[in-house]
Image 1: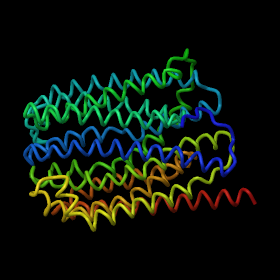
Image 2 (image 1 turned 90 degrees about the horizontal axis):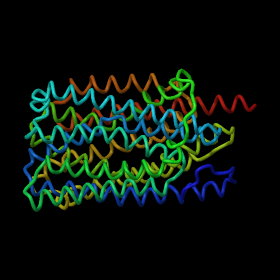
Image 3 (image 1 turned 45 degrees about the vertical axis):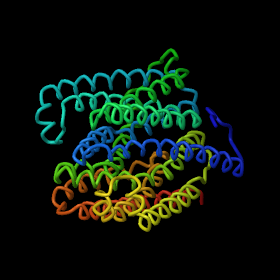
Length: 424
């Protein structure tokens, strides 16, 4: 399942390898997702307000641009392996590693200055949780870097195991602290920190063959020209993935935000099924573009994403009350079930748009990036005005996800039309 520099493959062979790799990542994502989900079962042992505090601390870590970071390093690793520029990649890795550590120091200083205001705004019960969240943020910068390198190497076997080990560390520590030491949100975020530490350690070890090389100089301006559009484009998509929880925490009381987090946990589980398709597709397209090879994986990815996402949303719509009752306590059932269908179906266009955005950005079709940024900015502004109810928040999310999908479809069609014209 690890093919660092695969040769040109026939279409049947390419499809077989694609399904084998994406199938393994689906298994790994479902397994790790199930373990991640078990953490939320601990909500039955703590108050709704404490669960809401855990949700916002987790959402802070989710706001780290892990998607753009992983995609940048995946693109750079795949491109370097295709063109024989691994030593330049080693220099980039070391520079990014040092830069993220410097950023962590700045965040630590800012947190020390304004920790009281942050705790009041996010309604956190103890300062310890805030400091652990800061460590989680640093690890959340490092993990996508090394996961991106493994993705670019097409080392999907260990990429899947990183997720599983992360989840095992999270649930084992959180469960022990909550069940045996009467812990709450702070102890749950401590479990997140331990899981991330284990996952980062594996990522560092598995990519030592890249960052351990003697580095060579690289053109910083050329590098920025390659990675900035990826950072901005994937950052805008990730904002649409995660921002709603932060807004809900700011505008609603702790109990309502806790109910919202529960519905979001179940709905975002749909992404465990569909994201592996785009994860496998991205480095293969980067590799094929670098070698001027043809690839028709997008159709397979879109079909699989549509079927899995829509099927999952339909299942949550029909079985919502039973699923919520199984996952959480009785008090969650009515409020969470009211918003669950809206949340689940809002994930469907977002999943499809994410696959199309992966394809466009892998092919360096960066004309869509300003549109993605405009949509993300407009979404953030819209949530400040349209948040009278939890359903209104999700309606706003759904509208902007549909706009995102429409934009991705338009630019994909334009890219395909332009390619056809060039060939004729």
